[in-house]
Figure 1 (cartoon, rainbow, N blue to C red):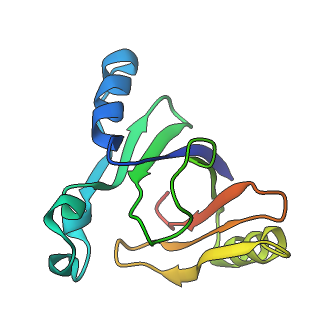
Figure 2: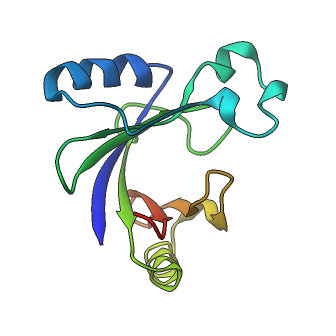
Length: 140
């Protein structure tokens, strides 16, 4: 299983990741705006410009990932809750097992579901306040 840090920003993900890229080098392996999501035309223009997902490989087995938050969706942004542990199990069954186990007694943000970007994904805050993302992609 791969484990990657996932950061949340309040509208500064792209700026932060351009800075990280200047330090680490390399190229983004993904960069999607909120405007790339289905029904994004219903979002205010300033929200459409926010980063939905950005990834910067830091080595063979580590990818630094991030997104911008949207007020009213998920936990509100505040410094201190802007870091997630992103787990990438090798099967849907393992993703479900980990999600169901770690989320017991916690707060589910997004249940495990197939997503429009092609992955099987869910997120939650465990009973100890730690933020987790479970993301299964058969090609990862």
